[in-house]
Amino acid sequence: MNEKILEIENLTVSFDGFKALNQLNFSMNAGELRVIIGPNGAGKTTFLDVITGKVQPTEGRVLFEGRNLQRMPEHKIARLGIGRKFQTPRVFLNLTVRENLDLAGNRNKNVFSTLFNRSSSTENRNVAGLLETIGLEAKANLKAALLSHGEKQRLEIGMLVAQSPNLLLVDEPVAGLTDEETENVGNLLLALSKDHSIIVIEHDMEFVRQIARQVTVLHQGSVLCEGSMDEVQNDPRVIEVYLGRQEEA
Ligand SMILES: Nc1ncnc2c1ncn2[C@@H]1O[C@H](COP(=O)(O)OP(=O)(O)OP(=O)(O)O)[C@@H](O)[C@H]1O
Image (cartoon, rainbow, N blue to C red; front, side, top):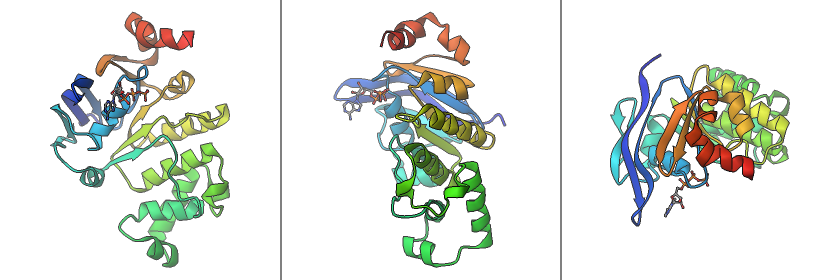
């Protein structure tokens, strides 16, 4: 798979004259797992906001599977196949793990028809597969409120996958997780990367090392450099703007 899933050209986003993104260029092949790092304020969240249509670019353009997303509303972009997971889990706490996955996979149905109608056998199979992928088979009938923070993160990633997006955007999935939960989320993303295109934004360097193949470093709204984790870590510009600061902290 070598076709581009995402191409971003000369993207600038100005907030009252301040350029959160500044002539940013980026491209990614279908099937890639790309990790984006960068110091606070580098523009990482704004970058995702533009891709999902939450923020409109001041200049430049975003092509998703060759299609220009300019001026497209968020819901339409989501329907084209871009799914986003926010930093804090947004699961339905009063529903079970299975019901959350059912609901996510049936966005065109309402809550009542999802909960009270029998699901088709294909839907059941999909949910069973997802429960296994996210490692929550044993907790399928437990209310989501009773899950640990890491399990909620995995459930929400499962809910995202249930919507069959072509591109998954995952914003800081391991913030606040224990080491064990962090590793579980990492393994989940690696498993999903076998048949999904994924962008992960993350600050946790151990986690980035666990999952990263290709890393893009943002700084002051532009791409500073790209490469393997080793290449990026040894790049003096990165050490100066990012890793150097991390080590001091
Ligand atoms: N709506 C807004 N209005 C004005 N400035 C904004 C707005 N959104 C973001 N910014 C500024 O743009 C810059 C980039 O912000 P962004 O949140 O994209 O960075 P980030 O790399 O995600 O940072 P962090 O790692 O701290 O989450 C920051 O200086 C931020 O203050």
